[in-house]
Length: 500
Image (cartoon, helix red, strand yellow):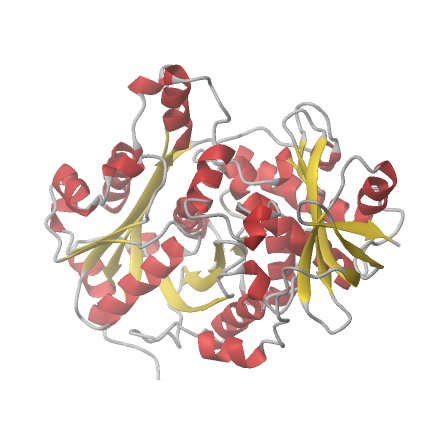
C-alpha cells in the first residue's frame, strides 16, 4: 500500500557543503563551525529558518574531540531549540544515511515535520595546529590510528591491523582471488573506477581535490603516490586530511508545500536497509565478500521494488577500492559508469563519518538537474556497517514510513561458519588473505598473513619484509598468494610466515 498522506511523506528540501582552506590553521573553522556554516547554506537552499527545526541529528566527529557533545552548542549557534536533538554514538561511515532514515521514520510517524542532519571534520586544521605546537607529524593517518587504538592492543592490532587502511587490503586481496582476477586486472579495475571518481570531483564545487587523474596516474607508484598498504597507494585510499562540512534538511511533503517550496526542488526519500559484520575483523566468516553488504543492498532494492536499471546515478562508498568493487557487483552496476555523485573519499574528500552527507547533498543537486532515482550505499568501520537508501525526483510509490530498516537477522541467516581463532598456532596453513604495510618513505615496514589451519581455524602470522623472495611472492603478481600453502613458525617474539 502506497503512502498518500503528505504529512507522513519525507522529502529532502535543502543541502549545503563547505570546504575550509585557511592559510593559518588558527584562522580555520573547527568541526562545530563547519557544521554551522553547512546548515546555514542548507537552510538558504531550502528557503527555511533553522529556528524552526524540530529535529537535529549530528554525525559524531574526531578532529575536535575536546568539544564533546555538540547537540546544545550547535542548536544555540543556529538559533534552534529542537525537541529531538542527538549525536551519533560513534563516527561510522554509514551514520548520515542512518540519520536520514531515522528522520524519515519520525516524519512517517508524525513525530516531526522539519529535521536537519549535519556533520563535519576539520582534521587538516587540527593537524596544522598540532604541528605548530609540536613536530609536524602526519596530518591524518595518525589521528585515525589513535582513535582506533585507544584501548590496549588486541591480537589483530599487535599484527598491524589497527586502522581501516590496514584492514581493507585483506578484503581487496581476498576478493581479487575469489573473482579470478590477476593483480594487474584488479588494480586496473580500481584505477578505472577511481579515475571516474576524480572526474566527478573535478566538476563538483563541494569536492576537496578538483583535478582529474587518469587510470595511469592512479596506478603509477612514486613519491607523490606512495604505497600505503598492499595493494593500495595514496591515490586509492580515503583522504581524511580535509576541512569539510555538509548538512541537509528533511521535511514532510505537507510541510514543504506549506512553506511554498517548489515541487521541482523536492527529493523524495525511499526506504532503506542496514546490516553489520561482527565488530572484530577476525570473527567474520570471510574476506572475499560480506553477507551484511549483500543483505543491505538486495533488501533496499526489494523494498523499493527497483533494480540497478532504475537508477540514473549511485553513490557507492569508496574509502578503499574493495568496497565499491564488491558493492557494484551486488547491485549490478557497471564498472564503466561513475559510482559517485560527490567524487569519492580520495578526491571528493574523506571527512571520516560524514562523507555520505556530502554524497546526499550532491545526489539531491544531481536529481534536481537530471534523472529520476539515485541509490546510496554507505559503509563504515572496518567494512563493518552497511546502510543503503534510495532517493527520487519522483515519489517512490511503495515507500512507507516508519519502517524497520534493521535486517541483521536476515544477514546472520546467510552467514557462513566463522572459523575459531587460534593465537598460538605453529604448523602448515593456507593463506586466506594478507597485506604489506609501507613506511612514509615507500619501503616495506611490516606485513601480516591471515591463514587457515588444516582444521579450519584462523590465525595470524607476521611477514619478514627483509625476505626479498617472500616479498616478491606476495606483491609481484606473478602468482596468486591467496590459497597457497605455507608454514606458521614460532619466533622469539610471535609467529612468522614462511612460504612453501
